[in-house]
Amino acid sequence: MAYQDGGAGGQQPGSSHLMKTTKRGRPFLKDTLDLFATLITTMTLQTNRQFFRNFPNSFLTDDAARNLNHLKFSQSNRGPDPREPSRIVTTTTTTTFSMSRDMAKAMCQHFMDARLIENAADPGSSLFKERGVYVLTPKGLHVLERFMSKNCMSGDENLIRVFQTQPICMKLLHLERRSADDEIIVSSGVVTAVFRRFVGRQPNYLPTNFDSLNGFDKYNERSNGVALMDVTEKAAIGKPAVTHKNCFSAVSGLEWLCDFTSVIGREEAAEMAAQFVRYGLITLVSDKRRNNDSAIIFTVRGAPGGPNSSIAQHGEFRCTNKAIYKITDEGRRMARWDHSEHRDSPNSSTTAVSTAARSSEDISSTTEGAANGKDGERRSRRENNTERLKHIIDEPRLQSLFREYLRQNYCEENLSFYLEVQEFKRKFNITSSAVAAPSNGRGKLTPGQAAMERHHESLVQTAVQIYNTYLAPSSTGELNIDHGLRSELSVYVSDLITGLTGKAFQGRFELEQAAGFNATQLQAMIRLYERIQTHVFRLMATDSVPKFIKTPRFLALNIKLHDDDDTLGELPSSSATPSVPPGLNEEEVGGAYVTVSQRAMANMMRPDH
Image 1 (cartoon, rainbow, N blue to C red):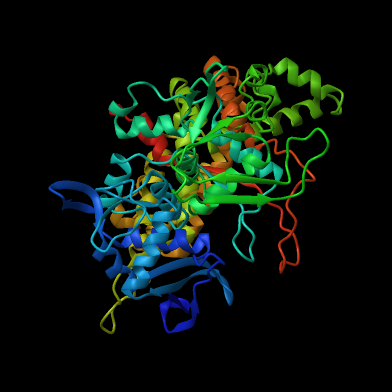
Image 2 (image 1 turned 135 degrees about the vertical axis):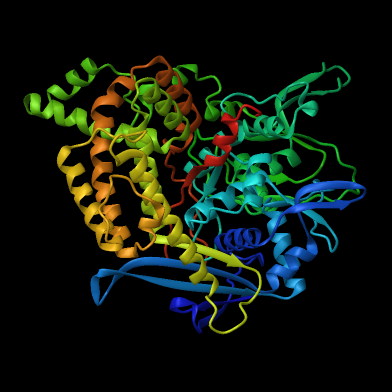
């Protein structure tokens, strides 16, 4: 499969490349995810019929093959003109993917292996078929949302409907990879992080009514950890029956890893599960397959631990339908299932909000010795509250609770303005588009140029909306800001409108008045908005945050979030890290991180979910 990079402005192709593949024969993960998301944004997901059943938000094999035959992705970036920094110029780069039908089907098979799509009529099928109907998985929607957000693609009504009506993976665990061969960098810390997510904060025994739950509730139950069960071995002669607790089938374990982490298929999932065995976190209970049944067994090797370590030199995982594994005592300890004290202590968190449960008196006493008098205390408190506010804004559930608190205290407009300007700044710098057919005809705008024009119009509307909502006199969400800042903004806007229309500015924007804004004028507006944004941020950090972090609802939610995410904050080091494979010159340090779906959070807050 090949792709071409177009030059600036999407003119003549600059270069042509073959997509890099791994020793397993699959494209690198980033290319796989980007190509998947680009494909989906070019298709119209609709209702398709097969086997006398209707499947909404789906696509056919033919749809995917046709679009992958000629796929264009254009990205436009704004920035200062190197020759005249006061001017803003736009550079558009177009990447074209081209592949045959057989290659397109093979690429879709990779999407299935990665659990980005599934067969709508037969979700258990692992093969991409010649005539099939396919839908996006919750993981696929999470990947698509990240791609669209990163590239400032708002999505059409078709995709918005999909996001609102299907489950989305709330938290996806990403495992870092080696740049040379795209293999997961396995270390003690990474195995610990994945395992804690895999087993959950508490043993996850599915409810008895699981089969009758709707799709959203079923997915939420599975997201708590791999589904566990108790397995009783039949009594042997002279021996009583033995019941093994906290067991799971090998297949369900592999499916969970594929659905909730960035592993790219069952092979990678099995290798991670084999690491669980090597680290002594899980062990085989039984494998009652028949003697003539085939079995795929994955084996991993590494340096053994010390004399008292549970880490072995090798571990194997059996990928059979009959294999049953259970969580060991070491696994329970690693999962902290019996560690209630840890969950009750928010102060042990490594995040910036970890000290939120302390009173202001506690903070004063801890900073008094280190700071130089009262000025040092105030500076330390200010820095703490700034970091806390950043964390509150970045964590969706804390942000939602903080917004509710501000609404109750009649200052919600501060947070709304901050977030809208943040999004406005992000969208100003970049826009993207994807099309599934080549552009024909001379004199027509390229897809990137057309997208940029629409994007510019949208930015002008946003600038007008922000001003009229938060900054115009007597506006609905008028901000309480410094008089000097307000005057400076008012003078700039007044001069700008007078220069564009020849008429005096009346205090509020009309969209027609702003239609002539160019990119440089928009950037000047953004800079003024940014200064006001900084003022509003300081106001929230110094006035609202100290009170908010003392509320019972914040303290309770912060403890819960600490329990959910502490697995990535305390990755233990170990000398039992696998050595560098032959052919790689230097070792790369691995890690794991979680991304949170904003759309999944929004769906949770809707009354119908």
